[in-house]
Length: 91
Image (cartoon, rainbow, N blue to C red; front, top):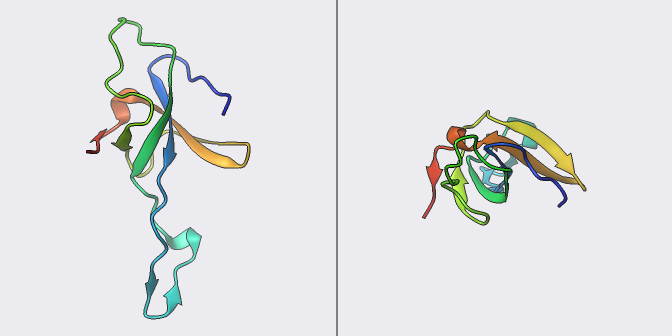
């Protein structure tokens, strides 16, 4: 991946949940909720106050259901989001 977010932004990739079949009915992608768990792929250029990032590359984080900017690079979907918008670090 060749993207470097600017400022206090991070690039994350949502961790897809396993497809669930309920009663023999397959739920279409358009009806599924987005996963809130994601992996940090890249960190931005830095914060204005020179404080370090709380997350690091490879961390699993929780993010809001509908936050950030979705981008598609080389066929993969990523989200660019402000670090302060992340909800927490998993595990």
